[in-house]
Length: 299
Image 1 (cartoon, one colour):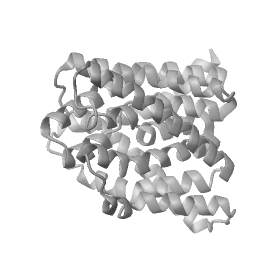
Image 2: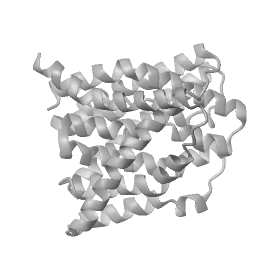
Image 3: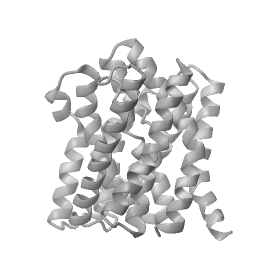
Image 4: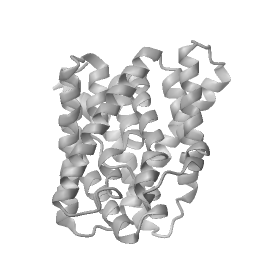
């Protein structure tokens, strides 16, 4: 019974804040969330990376290991995405991002934090650092079918990853004022972006529900299986394995829609939006199951 109460403690705060956003979005359909998007991309995400990687006891070796493990997971997601997009006769390149870039930041970070504390946040941060990098490199490349180096170099998140890696590699002691500032920004960003996720669910429309459902099943059901395959292939255990499994189970990230809306045709963007909505709704069912498994077998 205790483990179910712990599961409730982990899941409820995240879903509750998403629910607040959904309520606000329904009550005021014209509410402007561009501030949250800009804040998250330019200030919040870099702060999350720096705080979660440098202040949670994460070592350079663990960072490299789980950065690499999740890279393998992305390769697995890519294979799954190519297979499903081929079967559904969709654009394999432009519609691949929602398969391979899950919501490890907005939803994954707080869930891992509540499940495993600061240690879980550190490992989840290493994984999110990879996803953030991929959004502004591979994500843009796939959405536009061309690589844009300038976007990569202009991304604050890219430099936050480099700085964080240097800090933990050289074991640099971070001043308390930086720790406190990045901590405040991290928790503010998590709250704001979770709320914006709820608002987005009131705006994004589902086109071709059946195809979106099939794609979403591939993301939230097969994603954890990829995670388990990596865990048992490399004989992983404990908190780190639990975080990896949770992060592999996340739905498609909304950032896929934002990037796609800039670089991809409307039809492709509609399909991406559909997968984000359906996979997020499905995750309200699958995430509690995955977290329960993680807490029970990887603690």
